[in-house]
Image (cartoon, rainbow, N blue to C red; front, top):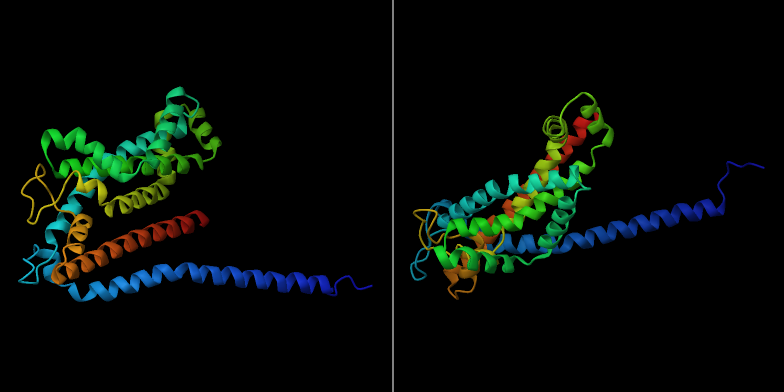
Length: 287
């Protein structure tokens, strides 16, 4: 009896496997349809409005046409940058504490709080900062950055915790066995060994807050001109897209579509950067 000859059961398993792989490929293609449709639609609507003036000029009156979103682009860059400076160290510190001291009571409380903060709607964060800051000091870029910082904090904290948990325990024990204090093991061994993945989590958090609109309506509000300082209302790209989209003027609606295109391209580039970092990190680990 030849045990190597294929049996009908082998043919059935082979073709059933090919059939299921085809189903998975079809479902994957279907999952791409919404993204491709949205992308092409926004490119079609927003491409014609892109020009050098779009990135440098302020919005013109609807009757005149032209103008750009330079003030909103600059305002978004400033507010997202300020939120990152506040949220990244804070979130990474919380994530390190939750990962390295999981058994402490404070660590359990912090983890529970971070999990709850992740589920809070962004508009609630905006209302909270409005009552905490805006009522007393007015609309400003500072208030907008603080709202985005609160949204960014749990994302950075959770990603940092999960990434550091992937480091084998024996690496920590080896550092401690050499006489290094716990903080030196974290700074000199754990963080350098996972910096690529930590950067990935940070970049994704930045992409998450870059498109937020609701909290900025209650904090930075908006400005038709370039803000002169950080303590006055400041225009941002998501808020200006929202305002122009509901204005009813074709010229402003065209700018809104172009702004949406710029925002999508930014998020796409951020995700492409993340994928590139992960690819290079895997290549490095394989070597």
